[in-house]
Length: 195
View 1 (cartoon, helix red, strand yellow):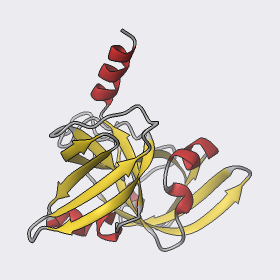
View 2 (cartoon, helix red, strand yellow):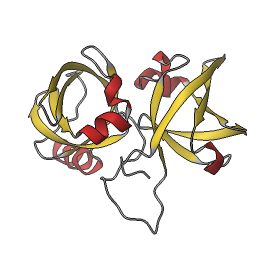
View 3 (cartoon, one colour):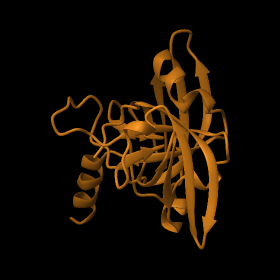
View 4 (cartoon, one colour):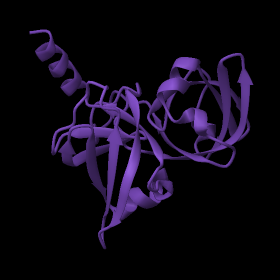
């Protein structure tokens, strides 16, 4: 379980394919605090640490993960948003994030609002998920509030701190991002569809 509050960035150091799996090796300022078998969110994708060597650690993404996320497009030097799982005795600052990406979206516009930034995204209309204005959405693992919501599109506004301390600073028009829709909204939508 995660909150969508990004702790730091990790940089892709090495990518190795093995069958349909990909092993990603990252460097991060918190590697020394990680342990093997720990769940860590990478751009919103919950992955298990399988190996740690000095400042580097490795995780594995299976084919299902690679098909539904933007991880397959990573290359050495790319940055990902990093969050360790939520501590049971900690504050709950974001919203309930499972680390289970639903789909990807494309950035359609980035606006500098002279004090904040507005990012607009569109996603596949065949995905049966919705956003609502002032509801929660997770973009590349970042817990955000929806500003504008339409069928298969939405926008979010972020403060300069989020822009500078996540990989939002690298998102431009045409960038592919990971989306995890609000779990409460997903359950309500499923219940309503079954009526």
